[in-house]
Structures are given as structure tokens and as C-alpha cells.
Image (tube, rainbow, N blue to C red):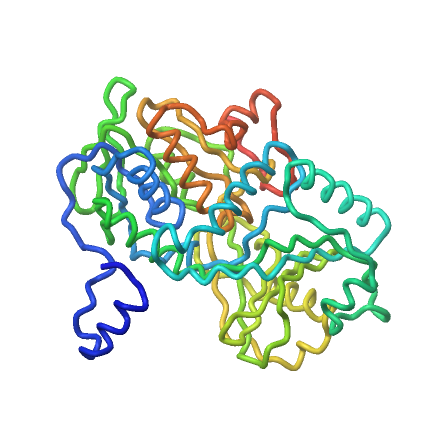
Length: 416
């Protein structure tokens, strides 16, 4: 069933009793051409693009919980392509272009809102760094505007400009950046993949891999063995644990990243704003809640919850940027498990196991990468060759000294 004004009117006349389920709930088959481990945004997008771009429809996505229970539903919804290094800019800009056409492509309202992303600067050195980044973006055809203090004040007059410890001096704006409804991305890709024949198997946890003579044969799960010609891993913060089942130790560590939502208030913030003197970012949802986050928790964890010191740190950053939000009550908080690479950039590559492919290391940037990650991972699995915009995301770059040190905020690396 295609969603449209006409289908909405038709079902309204029948009391909305005849809507079909968004996707099927199939039993696992004995064998698939491709099995994607991980039913988050990246895994679902990969399955969809395998079917759409490469005609590979005998695909299963297996998810240990329910669709939307992982990081794809536990983030702050921001999308952007304001990167600096040539290994990252083309990839994230391709993702931005895919976001712009996503809703028409998958026939689903993902609430793509290109409201702009504004990074604030608080010193001459930071302004120079933003000018360099903006110029690098423009050289790659990405939109960017370097703003002075008064231009920022026109966009966000409610910020603390004058009596702050770190007064605002300007900012870097990407007008095409913005937010996308995270749950809708998962649901939309799941529905679109299902319509092309992909099996989405929920409540099916991987317990091991079956490997013979260095070749992947399939996956052991809580619902039995599932044979596969090829297997793709897209399990975010659980990457290290799942990879260990295949005998691999990766340069990945898992940390919790918390996100927060306030009570609903009247429209206030019509863009995405990041604090340059601390790690804090904020936007406002269509429901009126302020959505914000900051740094990862300072210790390794596989738990989808956080700690109070990090909550305090994030709220302090918000108060420093705009003291008025101190009167707003925090409504809820959640945590996602981040797969932190040592250079802050992702990995999309084959592994030493024949037929096993890796999608990992997304750090803070996993959600905004969803469409391009799925597109490029599908290309890699289907053709056994990297897509041009993801060619630098090699697994061996840490051993060969070709790190893409965009932020260098990955955790302590494992080098073998």
C-alpha cells in the first residue's frame, strides 16, 4: 500500500480499519543470499539499497530486539555534512543529498527538516578553524556560511552573547543541515525494504557465526541457524562483542552517549545550535521539547543508560550557552551505545573472514550517515569493492597510518 492523500482519505472513510502492517513478521528461512546483522538504521538502509540498487532481494535483516530499539531511536536526530577532511566530506555530503530525497524515495514521512546547523565560535583561533572548515566544504560543493557575531545574533538573539565566560564571536552555518525524525527513518526503511522482498526478523539475537575454511557459512541465532552467502555486521555499539564471535578484535570501544528531551515549550529554537566552548548541541522538536546532548560517558559500557555526572555536565553546557533554559524541566533521558573508533571516523570494509563485511566505528555521527552508510555498505556487499565516497573507510588504515583524524575523539584503541 502506497501512502498518499488519496489512501488517507480512503481509509478515513472506513474508520482506518484496513491499513496493512508496515512490514511483515516472517519466519527465518534456511538460507539467504545476504544476512544483515543489526536492524538499526544502517542495517535496514543496507538491505533496502541491496534490493533497490543491486536487485538482491533474498535478504534478511536480523535484530535482537524490535525495530527502533537501538541507536536509531536513541539519538538527537541531527543531520549535517559540515566536515573538514577529504575522506569524510564527500561521504557525508552524499548522505545529505540522500536525506533530501528520502521521503519521496521510500514513500514515508521521515519529517526531514532542513532548518540549518549553526556551530558557534568563541575565540579567534576557533573562528580561523571554522573558516578553514567552511572553505573545505565549499571546495567539495557543500553549502557553508561564516557568520560574525551580529549575524548570529539575528538568528538566535536569545543566546548569552555578552556576559558569558566564553562570549560568542560568530559561527559556521550549514543551511541545508537540520533534523530528521529518527524513529520514522527506521520504520520507513523497514517498510520500503519489506516491499522489495527483504525479510525483517525481530527478536532474533546472533549467538555465533559458522565459519568453514575461513569462509562465512551463516549465523547461529536464538531462532536457529540461518545460512548465508554473505553476512554484513551493522550493530553499532555491540560491534566488538559480535565481531569476537568471528574471532576478530577491532579498533573499537563502546561508550554510552546520552540524549535528553525537555518538557514542551512554545517555539523558540528554529535551527540546530552547537556550543563551541563545550560539547553541547540543541534543537527543538515539533512537539516543543528541547532535544540536546553532549559528550560520551567517560567509561566503557554496553548499557543503554548513563550516569548523573554526564547529565550535570551537559546541562551546565546548556546553561552557559542560554541561561534561560534553566527554568525548563527535563522530561526524559536515554542512552545509545556508541562504537568509538580511534580516529573518530567510520569503517566500511571487508574483514579477514571471506563473506563477512563490517560497518562500524560511527562514534557521534551514525544517524546522519544512515542513507550513505546503507548505500555504500550495500555496494560493498554486492560488488566486493568499496563505493568511491567510502573508499577511505578501510579497516587496515590504523595499521598503515592512514587515519582520518576528523576529531580524534575515539577511545583507547586496540591495535590488533
